[in-house]
Image 1: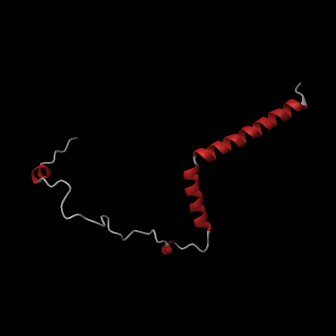
Image 2: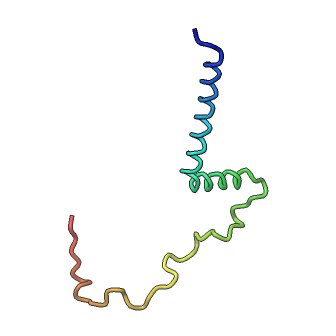
Image 3: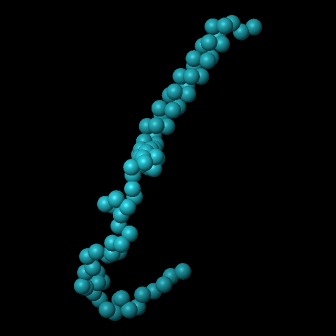
Length: 85
């Protein structure tokens, strides 16, 4: 039969494996997990009001600094655009 020390060793190795796996996932996915945790914290905050965000750019123009001349100033090449399918 199995001895009690072998069962304990197996349990300890299993727990250590889970901890190392958790740490590796935390390191590998840190940017994504950070944004997700910030979003959860913001949504669980009762004082948070999304209308107070300064980053709300829903009414901002799509092109805030339009240039007066197009990038391609050659009218011939601009009027004969080829569409390849």
